[in-house]
Length: 173
Image (cartoon, rainbow, N blue to C red):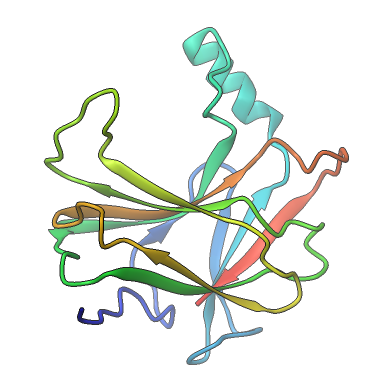
């Protein structure tokens, strides 16, 4: 398989953060180069849940996550020559203990959908260590990926189980 650098996090390339998430580049730490992409998202967002219930009349079981950051491609990307996604994620020790349950996701155009197949693919990231860089991988060779239109990172906004409030912070490189 070949290699492709999707983003080096050294300059603004189209990442966005919806809702209450904040997104900016920081010089505080980086694995490679001088900057990393910093994302901040509320640990618990009751207004997000209120909006879901208002819109659908119920609380669907899969809406416990919010997109922290996304990178939309103006033209579909052919990732079929690549077998894995790899990135570095730093979770500050002071980030409130937020260290797992991230999802890496991508969406593709023109995929046949059914109740069993969606145009989205995702991978759960668990057991990352706070206070250090975590090198995360996602083997994608079995997934359709010839028309990738969007890559994003999701995080739960249902709280940490201990009633903590505040903001989760991660750096991506």
